[in-house]
Image (tube, rainbow, N blue to C red; front, side, top):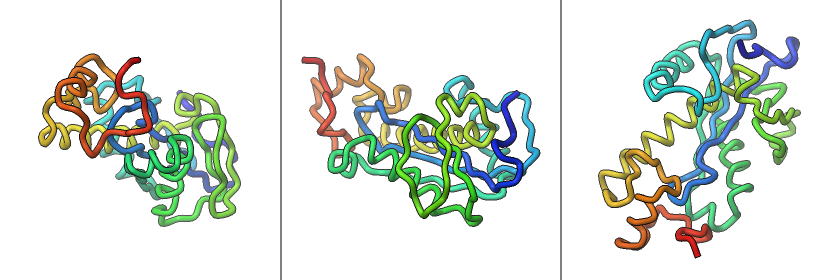
Length: 193
């Protein structure tokens, strides 16, 4: 069972991003404020959950969260500011959507660029330790996966309906045969040297 909070006396928002290692599509982050003593039997890091579990949890999280937000940064912006800064910007955009201002941000990972003077705590593998970060990972992943599945209908040669933009064999074969789309990150190594 994951922890319900880091500091019981503060309103906390868990933050996580998804899509940093992709060759195409935006990087997406979510921020979630859960009720202080929220518990859940199987909410965890979104990568450890099945698609059906994530879809069920997405609905439940949106229903129980005190506030949530999702932010995305486009491939063009990623190419302009680099993927690390784009990840921070996606988190900032998600936090800006929260209808309650958090007193503490729980950030998945070891780095963060402070935003709006809100104190933060970086937690390595935080999406496997705190429910709010796990909830953010679920919202970010389900949002981004759906976006990439939708784009796959317009760009069917890259396998995005299953690889959601990650560097799979099918995705790279599509790049070799079809070239790149407006959604590819041009500063990334799209094909092996």
